[in-house]
Image (cartoon, rainbow, N blue to C red):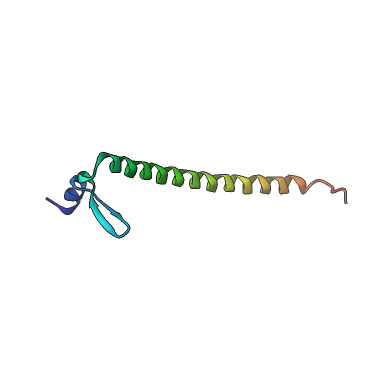
Length: 75
């Protein structure tokens, strides 16, 4: 059996520089691990959305600057 196959069957959680065999942990702890994974995924999703919003905002500002270029300012 390869190391990667063994790791898939016996996943290890490293937390506070300590290692735990996930399969041997109580269900409550496994649920907390899943919740932490979901939170991490949601955070990455939100960070990606913020990057996309920032790019869109820059694009709108560039278009606005381009369109205003042909307008006469009041002052």
